[in-house]
Image 1: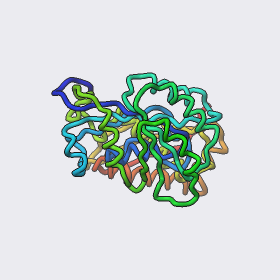
Image 2 (image 1 turned 90 degrees about the vertical axis):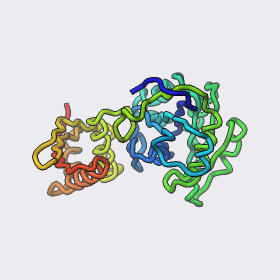
Image 3 (image 1 turned 90 degrees about the horizontal axis):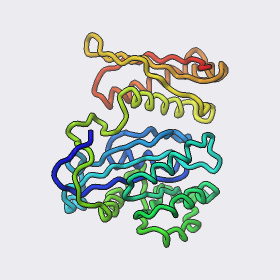
Length: 296
């Protein structure tokens, strides 16, 4: 995936913030692909996801064309918790920032009060000696707004951009700010050799993440954090139909019943939503065989 080519403007950008501020939605819409799972439930991103914005493969507005050719690798980190259900989650976000990161985007949701989680994020970011951009998300929502509570942050960051990740508002402005801090170098990722979407997930993991997201969307707060998805088989069968066999694994029998639902209604809904999105993403007809099992 990685390799040299002619000199362009390049950089690696980490997205940091407390859970459910819209980091994954922002990554998805910046690179115009669904690369990170998104749901209203916090802690859906359990590991860093790398997504590539390449100016030669992503459509650009006039404001960005003047910058010439460039490539940005976005790193979407797990949300930082005040009391993380898993210590590794907070450590993973810090570990990403210790790697070769060129720019940090600190995403905040102005519709939520500041809290302990924000203080933890700030404590981590103050140790990072890299260009930092404060991104105020969800400006499509006017109320409630706690914008005043975040004003003090503006002095600590190199620039401030207000966006709506969901509505694609001001994303070209954010990209223009990021471009200010890129450096000349060779492309880090050869886009022509990459599958769509351009991410570091193998196909089974990409499928599993899509199914897990649909489970979060259907079950909301009823779904335990411990649930995971295993994809056992992806094969092409007759008539160009792809057969995908996957399992939703949970730790208790009561959760299994909850996920299946009365008469299998919930698991059917999860499967139907996942299948439709996978068909849209791949352009292939898909048969999704989805089961629920208790994992000891």
